[in-house]
Image (tube, rainbow, N blue to C red):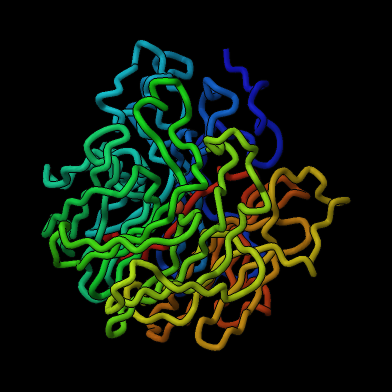
Length: 489
Ligand code: V55
Ligand code: FE
């Protein structure tokens, strides 16, 4: 029997969906640009069965992939669960079998296997397209290959045996100059291990280079940044251990006494030459981009002051502090000539933003000017009377942050809506940074449905050029990407 009554998020906009969807030729308000020929892929989590532990992390929900396919000015939608081994085992058992986020010791005895934690991945974090293949990613397991047309799951992918880590990050970076992908896996050799393997994968999808490192302490290494020369691995604060896992706790706790780190290594180098730069207590999850200029590395990132996730509690027993769970757009400068192991940091805008930042990916690894992310503009209040069924935090605005001039441009979605992560879509035929569209899914709380908004990225103040209306709440994404039709031909 399916019983969600103990799950706090069982009501409201992000209640589980538990269905799969196909809509040909969605309802549209406005005009979808006719020149867009490609797909907005999104990956997120949707509990098919309720979690075994009601206080589990939402990051443990079953992977779900959805696609908005654009062609000739019409948009079609499709949504499917990712058929992980875990999803199939649970479907066969008609119940939840897996316990806390990344703690196999809390699994049902019928599936408990702490030696092979990667087998319990949910593939719920981000889509990736590289070398003509589509994947759904989660940092605790291997990529799952997905058929880009049907969204059927084709199974885990280990790069023909050349990928030796048990895990694969949700945030690889693709170099637009060489077509190479840089990716890594942490806890690479098992639960709570300090091994991290980094791979360069050629334009052809084959592994070209491997580097192996040890981390200063085992933590979430969620994202990275790649320049033309360097790989940056930022992390901090979250801790785990075999003792913690055997005690039946959720994988991560927060240790405010731990420094943050940014590991820097040469793309073509050897892992043993990694240099670790050290900073204060900091929750470093997502990056915008980085580039190398002379002896300096400039990193733009919307890092948090401290622990963002209430479900990964402080290990000292103090309560989670929402005041410190705030992300700011930051510039971090690392001077490779300096003998010191520190960086300098500036907060570029004084208000907090969503840390799900994006750039025009044609400029990934290069000197880029703009970052895009969502935030809550207090001058544009939420309409509680018309949309009082709000659950969670509101992001009512997409911003284009100009790192050169400090200018901020804003797209406001409306007083009854909240925005998920945005995605930059280049205008076909354009070359200039920022020439394109900013798209993203909005939650319409007044009508309890999802809407894909499409705005001109160079004229955000004008509002959207089109809105694609879904007649239901689409499973929330964690991350999304745009893939031009030519990338998946
Ligand atoms: C994040 C998301 C995850 C995860 C670890 O946003 C970190 C950060 C959706 O899953 O497992
Ligand atoms: Fe992420």
